[in-house]
Image (cartoon, rainbow, N blue to C red; front, side, top):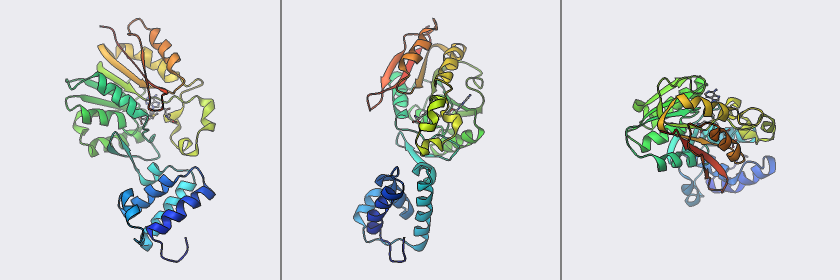
Length: 285
Ligand code: SAM
Ligand code: GLN
């Protein structure tokens, strides 16, 4: 960026080309989202205000964002914010950035349970995306959000507060289902499921996320093994268990569910890309 006046139009022309040259993983959308954030407007504004000049301060902020982006940080972490289920969530380097794929898990649970007074547990809550968006949609539910990471839990707490569900959400630190002291009606989890050996192949933005959020052990299935056995005593009869899975894990997770007589036949839900994304089942009554 030189000394001349940098308008929105000029930046819209220059920044995507700059990314293309120095860091092709950064997209035009990244450039637009960062620019819109710097000027405090939405993306549409950019296209109707080409002549709008940025102040020195705004340019300095944008320069900082660009440096972080080409160093491999995601736009969500740089801006500290990500939308999930139409709600705003704070994100930091201590949490997994909520993924659009995970909305399939939330939608699945919403399609299976209405607004009766039910107890929900979100295990490995991270930013709190799943628990918070479910409680927003179901005012009669009470929730528990648990995570092994204290740093993640403090982000989840902020998000519960920001989205007005903190009164109905208990946040507890602990290993998997250990924080659950009484049975729940709905158990949801998006556990770490990347096979350890595949982690070096992930995009830089993903590798910059906490390893505790990603590493699912040798075959990626460690958490499903534990969840399918530990949930037997922590989910009430008739209760629902729904987990996100990696797109090649449907069969293996299904087998883990079938290995327990207490469970109903597992069902698989596809994501918008047509890949297996969610497995759900119930505890027999
Ligand atoms: N639920 C969030 C979402 O869907 O965006 C985050 C999911 S992230 C893939 C997995 C989460 O599980 C991380 O927040 C991580 O800290 C947590 N986690 C990892 N091991 C755990 C354990 N043993 N017990 C509880 N939580 C754990
Ligand atoms: N879906 C995440 C990814 O794309 C992985 C999240 C997880 O392990 N649960 O890397």
